[in-house]
Image (cartoon, rainbow, N blue to C red; front, top):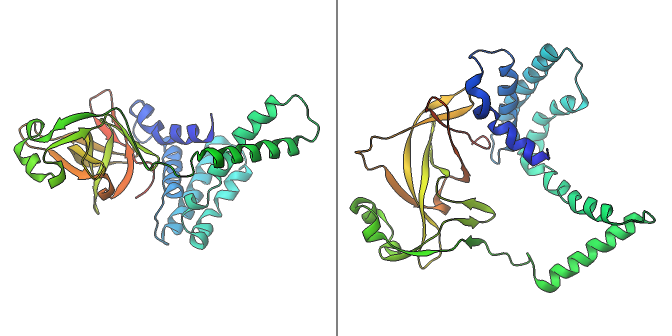
Amino acid sequence: MSSSEMLCFVRYFGLIVGELVPMETEIWKLYIVLRKIIDICCARVLQPECSHLLDALVSEHNRLYLYFSNCSLKPKYHILTHYGRLLLANGPISLTSSLRFESKHKVLKAFANAIPCRINLGYTLAHKLQLQMVNRFLNQTGINPDLLKVGSCKNLNTFDEFSTQLFNFLPIELKHVVTSAPWIELRGISYKPGMLVILEINLNNCIFGKIINIILGNSRTPYIVCELFLTVGFDSHFHAYELTKYDEKENNLIGCYIKDLPNSTPTVLRVLGNGSMYASLRYAL
């Protein structure tokens, strides 16, 4: 797997097999500690005190790895011990990651595999990259990117489609015929109905909403209509929030502009075999 695929796999591994793992399984603690380390390392905003928490988690992770594997630590586990100090010195670890730079290696490797001659290979690759850059400048590809991409749209009358309570809550520009989109991509982040977004963050829990509709008015600012979920609490076994639906008799629809969300990264709803619903975050908030 690539690094991005491995990261996605680790994030959702707890929801994939967690229900098959008995509670208080010792080796499962190793995964949970690793999951907490990834949460902190991928976070975009952190307090300085998180460096002490990261040091403690890395120490616990290395201890559990030695205990269960009966092997010595690899160099990358030693590098982990410096992350707390780097967090204090440079800020969030994710902002100093070389992941995006290393993704360029895929293009270089594709060029290298397509070239039969290995004489002066570095010069050939550099020349190809320069030609690629010139082509981008001439065609303006990616130079002035469209911040908003929208799927095939259709007209929607909000007065007919939405309840009176929700219609009264809508901004003025949306209280008539608007555009409904099956999906949008805003600043590189994709949104579509069925995804979960975080509507509110408080000291105890996050409040989640499932996207029902994505509509756009004259301002072309995406507005989402969401079905609210009740957050039961954070389940440490799955390292995810347990959710449940409100009573069907209650009006649990709410809307907001995407730009007003406390966190713009969506997530997915995972339904386990027993019917329980969980949502996992991509990083610590």
